[in-house]
Image (cartoon, rainbow, N blue to C red):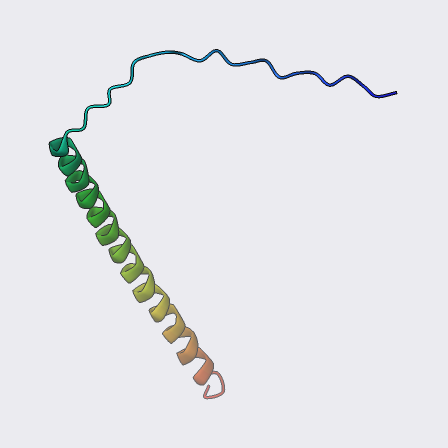
Length: 73
């Protein structure tokens, strides 16, 4: 015997009026703000990556020195 499937409740659709005006000034301002934010994020990430590379290269250099000098003592 097949079980009856429960139907999902139907959603009530709101009929709010959507503002369809298109202002190029707002678009340009949003693009500028987004570009500034992206640029700031890129600079922050580049600085963090640079710091990590410097820290890791020092650690690798120290390990290589220790490895090369292991039998000299």
